[in-house]
Amino acid sequence: MSRPDLNLLVTLDVLLAEGSVAKAARRLKLSPSAMSRALARLRAATGDPLLVRAGRGLVPT
Image (tube, rainbow, N blue to C red):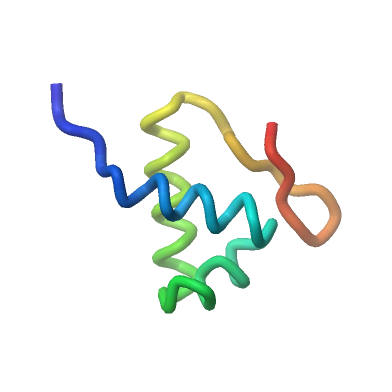
């Protein structure tokens, strides 16, 4: 079994706080596409969508 990327926990924390991929990306000084890929890795690792669209933002599942 591969070791989990614990840096993704920071990504999840910021995504939950900001409620937006773009805002979270800005806060972590990443591109929006890099943040989107990190969210995809989080979803794959957990087998859960974690965050879904609600209007213009994201809400936890």
